[in-house]
Image (cartoon, rainbow, N blue to C red):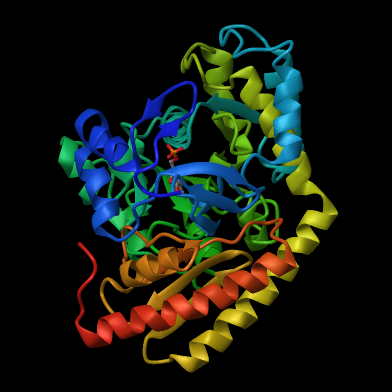
Length: 434
Ligand SMILES: Cc1ncc(COP(=O)(O)O)c(C=O)c1O
């Protein structure tokens, strides 16, 4: 299909891809629309199935972005689609004020799947809202206001969540609050202890592996020591498992690999099965106080939408199967070995591999190296995104049900893309916008 072909979907139509992109700038988001075209990724996703997405031109891409794990189980996973298709004959979003069949069933399933410290579930419609719920809950439980996060953290863009993250996003909307939201360097226990010593901190919020920072791995014992400091200074530990949960580390919840029983745990993205937005906050009995005191304390019309709960129940069931776990171990090993081989061919350019299960960050020897690689991978049929808060690092997130033959094809394509990006940087350094 050419770029000039008309795009007619019945629900809407455009004269061509170019016309659609023009309208996207006019009516949607001019900067974001231009950014992708200028970065060499003029993608407008059309068909999607399994771990493949197709541009409207027909170009096929293997998806190793997965929107941070939203498509852990592949695009339009047949079992999830089947579950919500059947459910739509009976359910809709539901009424968020009332006890609900689907919300209760999912809450029970989530609690059974999680560390024993977590006993109740509060729903949001997306990860940012769920993080806000987690922070509000921590403040209520401790009657303290301060929240500690790491430098270059990313927990979403809602009111409280955005204040835990990098200035890039909070300052734009005058939402940085350094007094109440101190940030400390990752893997720095002294800085963490200094931040907690005053005993005025409600909670430390920590991704088990910080995704948007390029998946730098916690040093052995770091997260465990942070949890111990939280206990010492009476702060709560919030595990953000939005990207690291749901088997991506080879365990259902990444935090259990560290033997940590968090006070609060947040899940989002993949729990939706990629089909119906939903997010959830799991809390301990100590943190559940407001649910007894004023159950209307957090209200969200779409939070815990019943169709979302049904998608999530199916996603959780598929993800928890023993064969899914074995698949993740197999893919992690296969991809890890393949990438190390590629790395040994280009050690001056492809300088590091961060890996825990199928969570991978690939480091390149240029401040914006991952933008070069992203562009060349796109041309070569792979969609992987740079790390916004450290663009040297490419986020590389293979699906947890990836078939071995696709994994093999992926590695072949990645090798070519990495070699070409190296050449781009060595020859003229052009080709990326920022
Ligand atoms: C670790 C983490 N937490 C929270 C969020 C926010 O989720 P959402 O985009 O659904 O609001 C994200 C989104 O990328 C994330 O990566």
